[in-house]
Length: 346
Image (cartoon, helix red, strand yellow):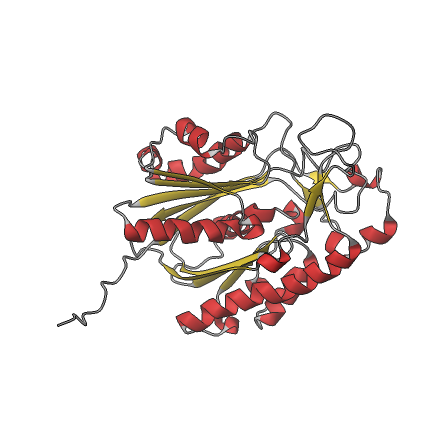
């Protein structure tokens, strides 16, 4: 007779802490205005500049940034907790070594010997939630008990200050930074639910080119940069407005809460209009949707953990409250959301 016994429940996994690092002193928008070429494009809502942003130094590597971001976690939880991490997952916007991911060097620098090391590249601005999902799956289905996830945004200084790029309308918008999260197999700050969706039909709408026939790895003239046409910008804006609330509300429905009842809503930080539209879609007041855009610019994948860490350090995240994370990536080819019952240290 076939057994009808229910499958055993998966163990809870918690996002027990977050930390972040912003490189160097803030860089004012006046740095870029001296090079500005297109007043019309600069007025586009997608490219309205923040007041400040941080730039990674030319010789500052992604691993350097992760090491700086992890330092507060080591102070709060002990160096042994970090060195004993079972799962290490990293996402780097601009890999320092295009052949080798950052993971093995991060492990060496932090004295770790994890059993699972992954460098992911497709999560974009939703990378932190993407890595939460991967880490939770591994912790729930293996004997691993801890995970460190790290997302590095390091294109603002190295790419967007190039002589041919810094005059473009989008150049002042990005900022650099790194955010990290510590996950443990326990119920102290449980991940309540995660939704991740891939939209391959939008995968070709963001381009990285040198503005010429030269491939980025070939010698010659032309500087590499992410680019959109104006027609694509309009499409991306419409997608972003839809996708972030869509995945966020899917999570809300499964955990049994309304969007307007979420205590804190943390998203990626691409521009002011997206931020306003997203909390309006969830019927949330602006004060429940933290905004680091004017201080940090668009931090891409690091936007969620850096903003989350800023709120936590400021004491604005109440333990036991529901924190909802949501973001979309690139031109809309990926979106993800996660809900956490907050209980992190600070």
